[in-house]
Length: 194
Image (tube, rainbow, N blue to C red; front, side, top):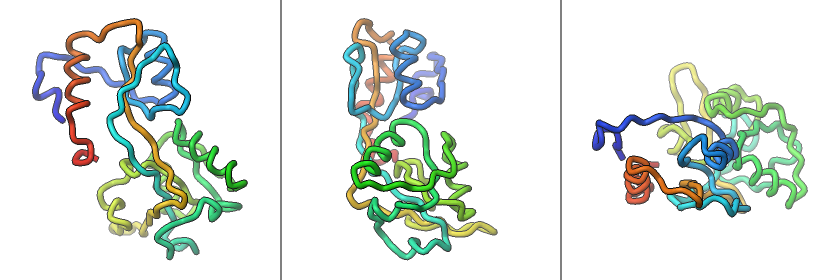
């Protein structure tokens, strides 16, 4: 998807934020639309358009006792040092931990994926992140780079997933350029992009 190449006359302004922050910006009119993790409880003033669904995966330090496993149970996180990734992903994970009465030892709360990966690589704790957030090397189960230890990712039992979509206000129409961007997003085969 190369919107700026196809429409060079349209100026694009991006704001990076968590899904709850983006929802607030769209709700109050500060942003025309956003790309978010679609929440379980939808705001009736907004409309959502699904782009794709993906699994969440566990990141495991290279020398951790759980690094030998290809799949982790949610209960494996009980008492483990845990690095939380902010946004709606965190809410879904917290709900699953509560459902299974799992109490990890939260050592960090961050919105930066590089911080999560660095802390996992350093052996500080485990984490759970969206699969699309993994660099291509890690997406192939493990990675080894010069002077950097392996990070392993594992699927989860039960599976945890998230829905990613566009969010708009119900009471307003998109500008022509935003509508073109929406059309391009909806027509993209996200399985090839992520």
